[in-house]
Length: 526
Ligand SMILES: Nc1ncnc2c1ncn2[C@@H]1O[C@H](COP(=O)(O)OP(=O)(O)OP(=O)(O)O)[C@@H](O)[C@H]1O
Image (cartoon, rainbow, N blue to C red; front, top):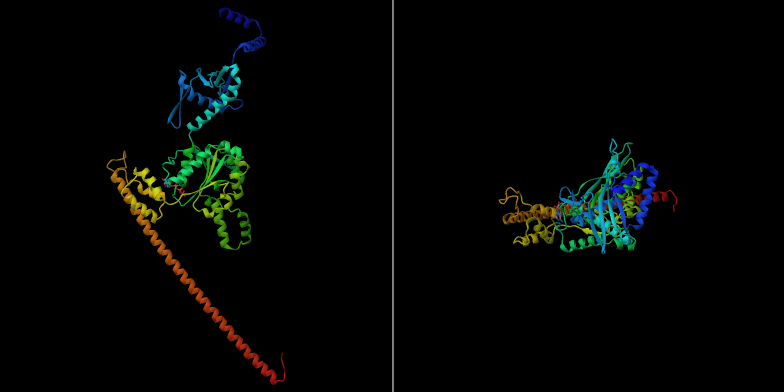
């Protein structure tokens, strides 16, 4: 070794740099003929991208941290999900081995340190980390074709599991030139709603769960039938029946991000398309209360033109003003929205759900909600006994109680939303409770909550009865008023007819007088 080093030192002293480089190059070539291994290097930052980590590097890091980190002796700890968990990965200059179909693979983590540091450091100056894969030459094909794909897929799946999911919303933003555009901004999505906490009929719930799970596993199916991998859900029902809770449960089940699209903040159809392109895969795009979002009848232009003609009519002017207020200056049209859902651009991502919610199904344009666009229509309705049982289990830890039969009867007789039922099942005050915060649900507490619910249901029933009576009274009054009006009209008609008759008789009398006068004067008239 000493002799080799001595010769090398002499060589470096005596020969010029270019010659040394050539010797090194050809030396490596000679070694590669006899070297029985293949090495593949994955750099953290690749090409021109100085700020974005290479996706392959991140996937490999995640794969190795979950599969091989228990074999590494020195590990690095990364905290993920808002300090909720720690992910261990190989430290620099560590080596681990992996096995794939009986083939042994070596992974080393390393970094190259720059020779000189610039005064103002930028990404390109910093240490460059990389992973190096080494395997035997004869396994080169299987490693490059199958093993690497396996590593990338596994890494991606781990990334989805460990990432912090986000809730996006669109806002208007102004750039340096003063032009406005709409962009997504986000917060960490941490809604606790799940399909376990969602109260609805178990059969219906299972149906939705199966549908979602099937969708998430149908990548190949969608490819086979030539459809982009997305599905539309229309959730409709009165306020407080769990539409938003269901969206959160869907996102938690499938581990998707949510894009909550506020249509009134979108300038026009082009802006809408840009927003669509900026969404990621594995996400739910939500438009809540779509009936209130915009005037999406597709006839806005026509109506505007019409209203120009009716400029003097103050009523139509007011209606137009109301519509403009509702759309907040947005020029998104129905056709723009239809293109957003299933136009060419909608295929720019994959594994996406599009969810519309509405309180008034009948107000929506049929084109918007036809099957194929909104594939599944889900009605969320007033609380039935099955729904109540889920709420009782969640809120009071009760599966049965002597008061359940009364509640079941009352729920059949009156309409109450799950939101109102849930509100009644909440203990009035945790401090009042003798057990305190640690266990707010004790038998006394549960019974008092159920009694509170019974009272509310009885009140609601009474209110509904009074309302129905009042409505019936108003209707009867209206009908009576209409009958009186009709009778009056009839009387007027008869009077008018009578008046006509008398007039005719008077005319005939005049004619007769004229005829007699004519006769007397010797004139005949036809
Ligand atoms: N089906 C349900 N299961 C469990 N909780 C529910 C359900 N429906 C409503 N709730 C409760 O009521 C609250 C309001 O419900 P949510 O916002 O999901 O209703 P919504 O139908 O989206 O109402 P809106 O149409 O007004 O937006 C939720 O925070 C939840 O606690």
